[in-house]
Amino acid sequence: MALRADAAEKRQHIVQTAYSLFKRLGFHATGIDRIIAEAEVAKMTMYRHFPNKNDLIVEVLDWRADRFARQLDRLGEAATAPEQKIATIFDWYEHWFDSPDFHGCLFQHALAEFGDPEHPVFKAVARQKGDLKRRMAEILGATIPTAKAESMASALFMMIEGATVLAQMGQGNAAIQAARQAAARILAAPAMLQ
Image (tube, rainbow, N blue to C red):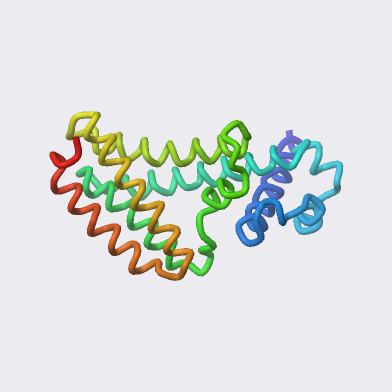
């Protein structure tokens, strides 16, 4: 049992090391040998857990997506109204943009490097982005018809994604404030989106 826990711990260490490197350097620019050296693991250990680099990238993206979802779940627990729950998502982004650890969106970077819709990395990105949009649609769907909730969620999603790009360009504060204002207008007038 201790061996299995140790193996799981090693695997997680590799994932977190790769995450740190990928977000700073990019996916293609980060070689397996660099990850092995930074994680201080044997080559055999790396390949036992991740037979190829794509498997590792997908695992990193899935781990980051799960961490993001848990963070939003915790933030949303205190909010009761849909508008408050949506505001907590914007709060998360505002805090992230202001973080010294902000290097842009790992998923946007992955999409730029892996543009083939059939590629497993592309599919991992699509899952995460789809989950965020679906989360917002479900929040809004608690009080408005599903079609309107989905339309509003799409608009809010585009604002968040655009703000993230602008934040990477050094305009995070202005971008999130503009996105918040536009979101408030959309949330105040759901009949506009049909």
